[in-house]
Image (cartoon, rainbow, N blue to C red; front, side, top):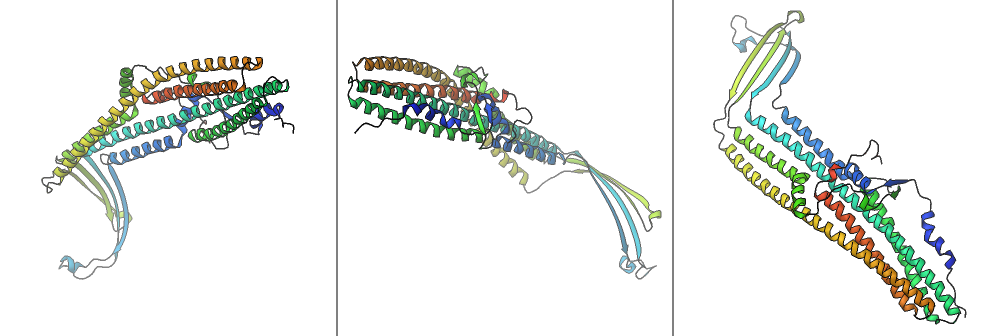
Length: 445
């Protein structure tokens, strides 16, 4: 029975067919664009920004404690009076009904309250800490988006590599068939190359599936509709304009000076210190003033005015040691916050040092992977020449082809590792905040 030949002439169409499917208009994204979109338009970043605004509104509520309060009231009353109840012997009994018109304006103002001013300062520090938290959340969301871009770029490169593997396998199969028909190689060589081609086609389909999933992850990270198309622009190594230090010591120093998480924890420590001062200052006297002006009468055209001015001092002398207990509690909270700050500072320093080491290692790994690919391609070329000359079988070309595929994967992974190390290092050093914000309308979904 004649051997069934694979339709190799249709293979190029098979490789490009998925790209020809109808796709919606694609959004062009560089790695930098993805990071900025994730940082400014990602859901987590927007939630954190709103949390910072909530903290600002709480500070406004604290500010009300030291701002003047003005109240206006107006009333009309129809009433009678029991003069016997009031002890008026000259006019016993109950009066006839009469109407009272009353208009009052009241003003109160805290003149001096050290505890209230300290609480207001703590609230303002809390707003700064919330803003820094929002910045840190945005940088983390940008990092996630950048890594998603890199994974999609890696998936695209893998698809191209598997397509190249399939093309090589198809070429070797045609060569084996020609040699077999000329009696220069056994039929087993043809079968081996058919198996190799089938394996390469299967790997290509797996790579396409991984690429489609990576595209969805990127769209989610940059807050674009899942049905949107996306086109990656540029190479990962050329998209980040960062001057990243390679020395672990310099990286650690820069991270401690720039990371939003460190600044936020330091700000929270200031909040805890201000809260402790506020509790202690509650034992100090406070000064407040109030005034009201009232117009009243039984007829609107007979309303007469009166006023009251008051300035008072309040000095809490003893409250059952409640304030002292609260001060002790707040002192412990301050100690806990200082421990948190120290832990965050050490974690940030470790992250920065690790990022510097990762950058160094990624550069070396990429150089070695490229050297390996060059050697594997040279080996495959020599194996093809030997196979064409009939001095070697298909096993040699199959092994060489596998070595090229593995070397290509190694280069892709090394490029991904270098790009991921650059993005992670930029985040570890707090450099993502330096990227310009999105233009108006860009985050639209």
